[in-house]
Picture 1 (cartoon, rainbow, N blue to C red):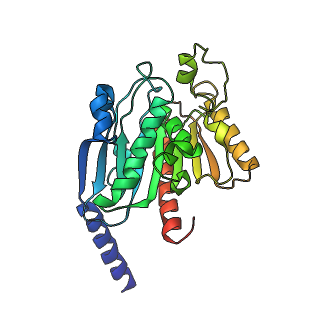
Picture 2 (picture 1 turned 180 degrees about the vertical axis):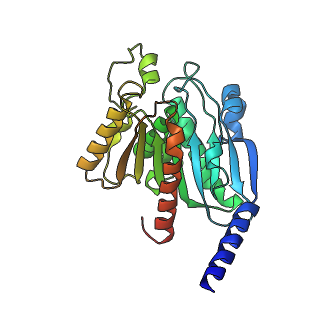
Picture 3 (picture 1 turned 90 degrees about the vertical axis):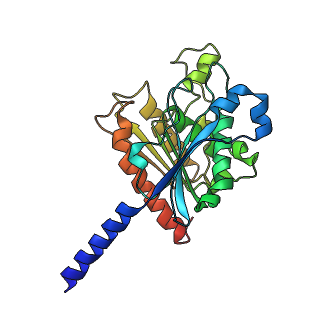
Length: 276
């Protein structure tokens, strides 16, 4: 009898999952109309796509920033994050050299603020917003979370971000920022445009994921390992680091997406259970 009931439960669960409907809204402006009208580049580039489960209350949201060295790429809803019960926000932002730092970081903060202020209109919870992205997108994740002033502009405490899952993010000052200053890619700089500059004990839980240290860009694994170490030395106990053996920089998201979703599930369960 127990086996029969279990089989029925599995069938019903699978049917419910398969029947879940999602909707995608495209090219939503995340800056105010007044700002969009004054700047045609912002008007065309600073938009986001929202993919969300219909008819669901208090769903969690993953904000995804694409890679491309802060100078290329396009907003996207990764296929690996679809049909998993999450809303996904794919963000477009301005590129160097047309703009310079910190313009693209400010864009990331504005898009995140949009999600905090509007996700409830679609059924989501602004207490369950996680940030992720690959490479340059991961750098943006870390900057707006660790340097709290970017979100404070919108009266949002960065510590209310449910979780941060950067994939192969730059932890020192980004190489494009250094390039804007006329510096070589191997010139190491850690200043106010580096996530490492803002390590702090009370940061939201952070899962750092990189590719294989021998296959990654420059010292990308070592940057993340140093971030992990310095966070630990501040007294932070919620930063974790994974190295994906055999994956290079461009290919590592394939191995990282399952870890991303597992961490997102863990954080949602913790928060819904009343734990920070």
